[in-house]
Image 1 (cartoon, one colour):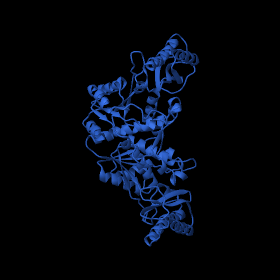
Image 2: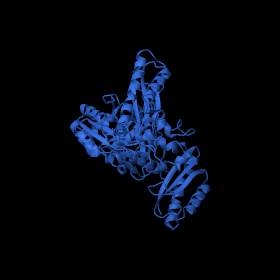
Image 3: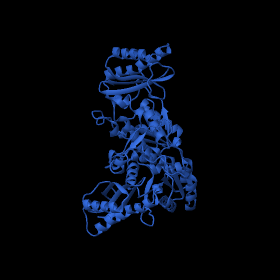
Image 4: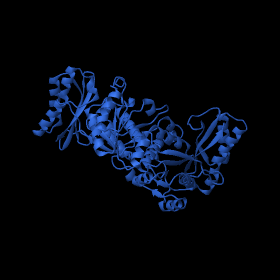
Length: 272
Length: 272
């Protein structure tokens, strides 16, 4: 894989990579499109990374269908699908871990203690296996984009990051491989996640700046809808993971919740 | 720097890098020679990395003379000297650390708890700033070579490592920038480090296999010489950091000791 990338780069080609865990949906495919627009050669990686799942999480049941994924990628002009095995990625004796510091600690980091060390490490490994010029990530995983950016900046990784917009279903639910876990009732309820963040945005547009008031309103909205257990809801300064009590500029509302068996996350940019 | 390296590689050239902390001596220059033999373009990096020094260690007093180092490098065919500043290497907001696991924990890792996290991190950063085909390190820092190899293997870093022999003074003292700390009396005493390891090798050649007996002999030898305080002496299976009680194959004797203000390390391969 690496030889292919280097050969393309030596021939003056720009290489893009889209790291994924497979179970591809329109969100992933929009990242492939973004890489395709920007690059001469596009690689999608598929690897369900065990180290970013906690015990009791859905590593075993995470949806896997490489053939279906390959069929989805082809019409989007993806040149290579790179799908290493676990033992190729983590051979015997593997012992290295990465800590990217405070940006990884709150929110997802608190609810999933090993998660971001696993993410940062596997992304770094993948960027060494596929040393692309550009790597595309989705904004749906807001904190993940900060973690990966911190890692790339701190370690001088010679790959540029491109963060792409969240792709949503018609009713606003953010595309996620984990939406497959939802029953049809839950699927309907899950649309409330985005709707509740839109409510916060609307209230902010009408002048509300108090994160506490917004939080109460969002949670009340979700309670009325039913079926949604909030893990956390927070308002952070855009581009950071720093929580704000009073919105005073570009802000991102972060939401994580359980809907049935699925744990879903979403976020929305709010002009505070 | 990275553009220079990529440009050379795109032109089909092989690039070698020699990461150093400066205060260059014949040991470093032998690494430059090794890179020169193997590569079309040779880069030496000089960076006294603060994160690999513990508090109370010699970061402030570590010898620095960039002009003298440049003069030494030129006749060895080094093409580029890359000497970033601390704020370039660790800009504001820097937060990432690397842990390479068990290989970093005993011996130097025990006596210098932050040391190998600092080493592994800065070497990874330097290999991203100077993404060479080959990086040369000296065998004098035996455990460091294992740490760097573990990091490079575990993270799929696309740079090959070349580990080069220890270069010694006429009396056997391993070349080290820290030898500059020795008074002339201490300099004379320090030769005992290598001599004592040679004694262990000789005893092994004569049939001794018990690491405990060898340890006693080496320590007795050093005590007779005087002026040397041993931090640790250990016999490990060659290519590993696993201590052996009875030598039963290729072994490396590891020694760390204080001589005056200098803390010196050395090692010797022994056919156990």
